[in-house]
Length: 199
Image (cartoon, rainbow, N blue to C red; front, side, top):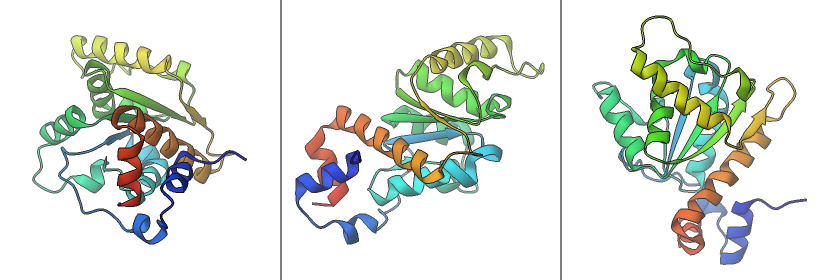
């Protein structure tokens, strides 16, 4: 049985982390995040997006999820664009209605344009099924921008998940491990181990 990256980091530190890691970190400002979780709320907010946010929070990974980090009065584009600009990794949770959302596609395009590492999760949708919905309300230059971002995401290795057959815990654990591996590449193993264990 393969050990998760989190388990490996904890065992290297030799410190008991159960109580420390289970405490939630203090809320970080929305623009000071490690991971931005891009998703279509109607499809995945109460499932994979929130579960991943909570799992990462347990290990002191600062994540941005709109309903967790935004409050009344926040300016949508200012808050979202700022968080994406400063995040280290993007997680794009693709779902059947993802491409109907201007915000989802705008966020994905920002990931690609700012050359962020994007971890795709294809939830109940195949990469080949992802297409920009041109309903006449999106300017042509935005459609080209969104199509370009989608094409890049389609050809990025990701996690595939079928909610009718799969286990939510497995996909969330796998996604969290991949996020942490990506952050280790960016920050280094010692820094991540320190953060996860709080030592």
